[in-house]
Length: 498
Image (cartoon, rainbow, N blue to C red):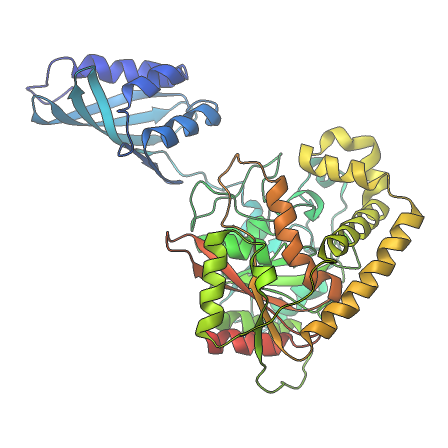
């Protein structure tokens, strides 16, 4: 310690904490942090408030990076309060810093606030598989001049492999001879490719919690999941690494991460944007989509990727309380308030068939996923994350007769949903909750989300997520759904609504 006078016992407490940290002695670390709801710990991933949150974080992280203390300074406030700043050197290289505010209590010295910084990685591999400056230069000039694209690792990038979120698949993959058509159009419009981003394995998840590469960060809701399967692209845009996140939406894979991370995102009308050289999951539902930070850029991307078509007149907005009620109370409040502010008419729909519609969607999606990937997956189930493995195992049991019955119900449901929406615009939650905390159970969340997101998928409709926030400041998406081919109307409406 370099500053005197240093209060008695502080040095011993500091080094006791350091030994506990390096040995991952969670009980000792818990004891050395002050109890109560006001204790703080922050780092680049976010701020933990309260001893319980800090303890839960420590218990689940598996230890801190190994390091040594190379320099310390103490700023004494009085005999019972002191600030300790330590410079650290990580075993893997680079220097960091740790700032702690210590208070003497009846049980000894305790940390009441701490901030930790470590060297940033050259590449955050939770987000990026390949990155460049740029990785691919524009091939033309146009409305997307100066914009950069984070490409979901399902699209072909010439000279690269498609990794699909699984290292074994990546190892077997060929080098792509051409760009995916959607990417080619973006390059022709003036955009560059920043890099190729992580996805949930084979896009078969809505969480973003890839078992092989980790969970991309969610800067709008730290310590919460990113949402998927367009996880890396969404995080890249949210962090400012790229301006356009190119992704896909089969069962909500644009709308859910856009909602969780406070971005604009669109799932396009099924088949409206080219899926050439895009690795499929379920061809009946796969749709091209993208995320941006502004509605204006969202629309500019559409000018490059969607066919030209006439705009429709202003549409009546409608909200359905039975759909909004599927969401958590905090999300429902945001959606109801937004709908009321914009004069949406409340309408009651018969939703008694919705559970059957969802089951038909998931059955047909699973059957098609097995037709696409089953031959490769079957001998490699142990190389998949537990959640995706479970879905493929269930998919392998679906026979053709069951799939055919599901397809008939999907067709019936799609026709009914298109009839209900008509020439209006439906408002509903983009996701059923705010982003769950990392480590929370996700099965119930997935079911609730897909009860909402399956509607656009079943009917092949465009769906656009508009970012809002709860009273606590967490991101929420309000989803607009319109009739087939009305993508541009939704994009115009998103700008008008603000």
